[in-house]
Length: 436
Image (tube, rainbow, N blue to C red):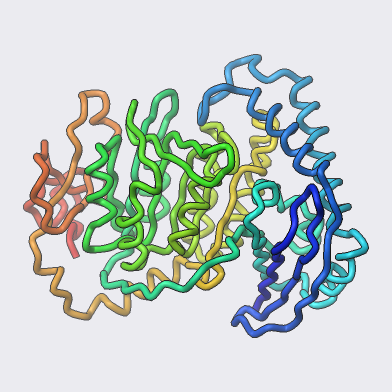
């Protein structure tokens, strides 16, 4: 059994100081163990240092999710950025050990064992605190099974209903201008072979709405492409195709419906996602993974690969995120501060999802009769240009969806990778069953 540590900031800011900061330690079953109250002094230098780091980081490249051109990042800029990173880390750790909070830190060290998993939740609405790279807290150097997540101060548990006999993933592949999203698609197929993955590639707005509203529900929502958050990180938008974007507020009803049908995890493998995470938290989604800042293509691809590998082999959500983040060290020579980018956000009223949980729920339901199994199913492939058609694989899609005109309709075989016409039950190449 592990521990849950909630660090809550409820009054104050970095300019004035935080008059009330609490650190609560719970068992993994949420039984409270200890709660310590304290305060933290004014620290205007912390957001200033972050702003300085952010400015230099963003100057390294004007485009998002794209490999840097030769000579785009100079040795000087890398050294400068690393110096700013070290300064911010030092200030953060000095601040957390201030006299008004040192007792809480000491009790934390005496209560939590280094060999148990620890979920650390930073609960705050303060923008400057939400932006901070909390993994730089020295606590995480000593506790290798600890991982941090952000949380809002207001949240509630969702009474969701999950009724499906296969793990379902909705993968929205958005605007790919200047970036390569094929590897994202490949990693999903390769690492989640027993899941039903429905790809919606460079869709129209209506296609996104209808996909999220699908009566079968989704376990995981995935987005790859370009995205952007407002400067105050309270709102965000997704670029679903060239010249077309969607804001989270435009999809509130659809997302609430999906969460009510059992959506547990949303992954936005795209840039500048804190505003997106903030809006999804308002809908009480259980977990979200976003990128803190603009993310180079290689970094986004590598993180997704490592996260899916760890998550699908049975690591907890928190440890899978930590492992994937730490394995970004291999690319930090070319992409400084890559390990700063992934951010996990948690609804504290919900348990972290695991691959075993999703798979076991499927196994429990596999022998139960389901009226949906007898419904006619439609299969979706967006109308694409000749070049674009090479970038998508067809997947089972909407049940009872009749308001789209389809081009060539196929079913993708997850075992051999071949395409089959929609009216066959078994793969024409390898003989594997295509429909459950």
